[in-house]
Length: 347
Picture 1 (spheres, rainbow, N blue to C red):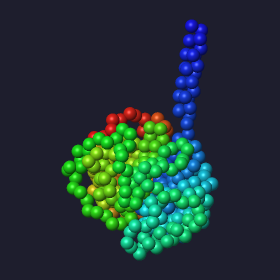
Picture 2: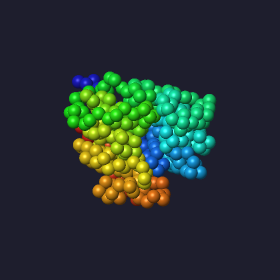
Picture 3: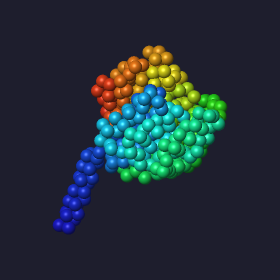
Picture 4: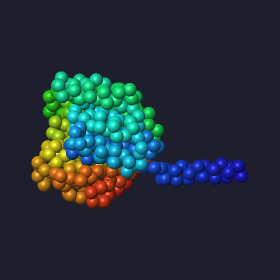
């Protein structure tokens, strides 16, 4: 009997330690940096390494590279371990050269060579190759993972290919597919975007770059291969060429963040699709969409930059492994916490 009490006591102690560790675990930090209609998303692994998705625009006297480096330093980083390029368009890969001149970068990650028949993309890819030089380089394919320590970074799409086997808990039939018309094929780099799912415990965040509707539907039709997510970065800056209702509804995000600029992204059609998606609690925007109207912008509280000539404010997300997370607007200091929850997968 005494031995039994000892075993029970040890078990209870271990359970308490495990629970305490779970509560005190460092959060996953995600910074949505304002590069005015491009992408630069800084993801800080709770166990140290950092991943930057895209580098914003070139030019503007190194504006976007400076904003990224400033955010990295604010996050306590002296280097960026991985820079992932979703595709070879100016607002995503253009800032690589200027960024590499300002901060140490460990490994460059991409989908392989440029696949768009345009002079601009070809030149951007040449410039990118020169910038990475002899740095470490990794080409990702659907199903591949980056070797981060505290989070899982899994490739969903790359070079026009997509994940074929459903993720655990996914593969539900998607009734939206039948009612939404198929989109035209896209021959640009957008359709080749390297898209990833980032998981930290129960928390799930998806970033599909600028993937366009036909390729989005391949992940969601006829069955949902991904399952649901907590946080959704609106695809392609919230443009109507992306954000197919079939995938947005299937992902069933609790919160969405739109990385639009003052005059780019935030189209009314895409905004409506995301804003009305089932289960969405809030939509946040990096910019007020000046070319839209008040009805298709969220309340000012949830917007990081209100004017065209902005102060480059960011949106930050801090997520815990129990699925809870807090979104912070650096412009006004407003923050909102979304508790962890167990949700059934979307149909």
